[in-house]
Length: 360
Picture 1 (cartoon, rainbow, N blue to C red):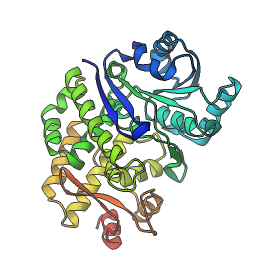
Picture 2: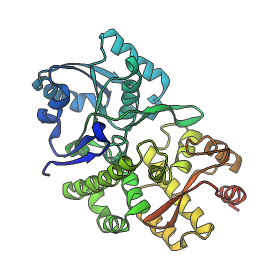
Picture 3: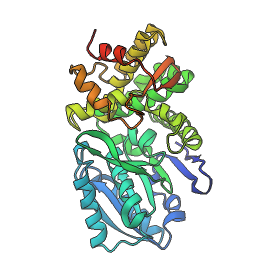
Picture 4: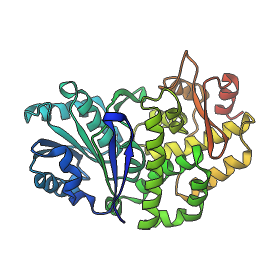
């Protein structure tokens, strides 16, 4: 794939998203941000043996030095204790305010390393180098960083934009099938919330995506990043339209919290959450029932779970009641008017929601 570069337009904090194969070795993509500086490569035990040396060689080619911080793999490590371990290694290495943190890994590494960058010495620069499909299309773009709390997903964090995103699609060659499918959930989300033509393209090419066809994957990543970059540029801190990117997430985050972080992958929980949002939209008469069936069918073909765990309604409501989008004690949901058109609903009828969650 030819290198494609998009820009997240945020004025003097704008940054590029580079997408293509073989980018880990492209020192020129890093050099504008690393020349004559020091870098801390934050990665995990799965990714480090595969890709850390290639990134460190590229850093050295920029005339910079680096050291490596390796954390355990898994969503369960996206917690304060692991973050504190990263702080400790930064301090032990005498990292200063000009040290650039390079987040090499999936969404957990990107979110945690980004939050470390947002808070270490009151803020240091960082670069996202995402190695999973989910991170390449979603979590590496937009500046959301943070860790989980036992009572809620992503409840501790900060907005901190990267200097650049370098998405090497060749890293998807080593991604487990389950992780690839989890990333497809976020890709489908972009079509469902605002691009019906893209959704139709995904329906036509989902088998190619699951087979890791490079051309199909590259197109899906590019379009997903185009949609997210446009929305982030309009609403960096989620005061308005950026909340649409949370389609399926209020239900999905509740699944992750209640079932235990890592039991469901984030994309799996979002897939089931999107189906719940579509079904609830149909129940309220906002969207056609056929749209819920169409979305469910696509997610099934992508290899994703579409049925949520069986949980009492009060547990659902308790977990959803801690969502970051909520206001004045009311649960905020992203619902569908139709596929390709989502809206933020701050006044969803509480009785209907409880009945829906109870299966009535």
